[in-house]
Each structure stands twice: as structure tokens, then as C-alpha cells.
Amino acid sequence: MILVGHLVNTQGVRGEVRVLSRTDFEDVRFKVGAKLFLVHPNQPKPIELTIASTRKHKQFILLTFEGHHNINDVEKYKGGELKVFETDLMELPEHTYYIYQLVGCEVVTDEGVVLGTLKEVLQPGANDVYVVKPSKGKDILLPVIPDCVLDVDVQNKKILVHIIPGLLD
Image 1: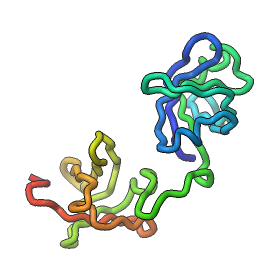
Image 2: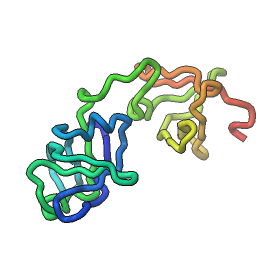
Image 3: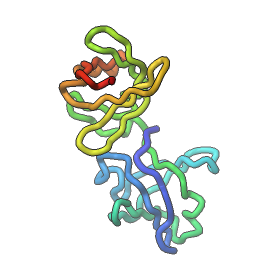
């Protein structure tokens, strides 16, 4: 299952929840009638939820779910993750990948040096940043720009990069 949002809190007393979106497809994932699965440490298995209403508020998406009409119905879901099955993911344009497909890829320079394994993708603004975990030492941060990331092969779990002078200093 793939994360699409964090259920961070309740909103009011009528069963509305605050969701921090983790998807580029909010209009599809959080539309009325869409099905999501809540994964929570207090629940033994994922709970299927159907969206009854949706609206934006500041940096959050506010949702209500069918059959959940007051705060007592949703209070127990705080801190949970909203997910969808991998088979329900949207098709991406060529040379575009989901973060989960990149994490775990081996990162190799165009000179054949293995830098380590991609551990995380940061999204600070202008461009993404790959966080590479080397076999020893501190994490390596690589900007996801054409001069640095040359090729991504998710099938073989390899990312080819060029180290720009001064990047590793």
C-alpha cells in the first residue's frame, strides 16, 4: 500500500478530519466517493473508508467519511496514514517515478563509484534532493537536476549520477 496522506487531527465535532496530503493527485485521491485505507498502530488491519465530503483549509485537506458523523467516530484515527493499493496508482509520464520506486536504488557515479543506497527523497522546493546512505560516513545529498542525475532505472534499482565539482566537499 502507498501513502497518500497523514491523518493529523480532527476538525470540529461533526466527524471531519485534517489530512496532510502526500500525493500529487489530490483531486483524484480526496474526491467524494473515493476509497482510502486507514493504517493505524491501534488497528489490527487497514480500515476501508469512503470520502463523504472534502474541502481545502490552509495546508490541509478536510475530509469526512461515510458512516462517521461525529468527533467520537474519528478521534481514534488521529495519527493514522491514509493509503491506496499500488494497483490504484495513477500512471506517470515517462521519466517520472513515485518516491517508493526510488528508495532502495543503488546510486552510482558516471565514473563507476558506488555512492550508496537512496534512503529518502526530500522536497524542499526548487528541486527534489536525493538522500544517499553510504556504506559508512554521513549521508550524501544530491540535487535532482539534469546536470547531476543522469539516469534512473527503477527496474534494475540503479540511479546514475554525475558529481558536480564541490558537491561532496
